[in-house]
Image 1 (tube, rainbow, N blue to C red):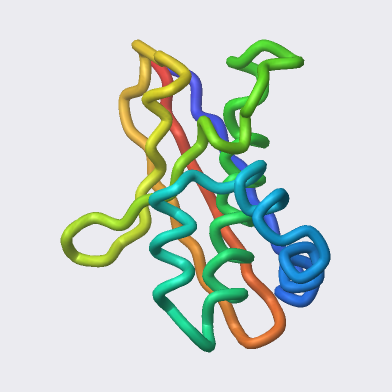
Image 2: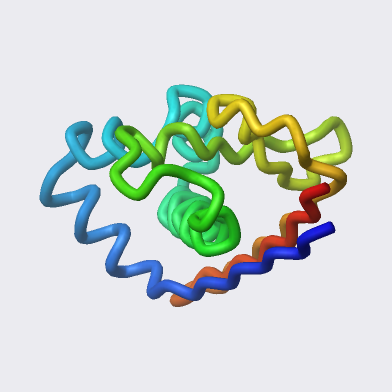
Length: 124
């Protein structure tokens, strides 16, 4: 068994500036359609939600980077953050085709100025 972890923190303003400067180009490069739909529905808090998902993708990438090809295309969109029926964020990594995941856990949080994420994955 191999336990991998990743953590990331980001300033919300960095994501806000990227979205305002690049618009859909940035959004479509980093986020899946479901993520964009979810975040855009949060109105005043959309930048915090985008930043939290960005931090989650970074944390996940850090945890799985040794298991994926170094120059794999569209890695950001292959990592999808979804919410389960209780609202807890979950990582959808099905695009990678991993067959050896035992368990994984994602935690994200955000304030007005910062977003943070922690991810743990256990491989066979």
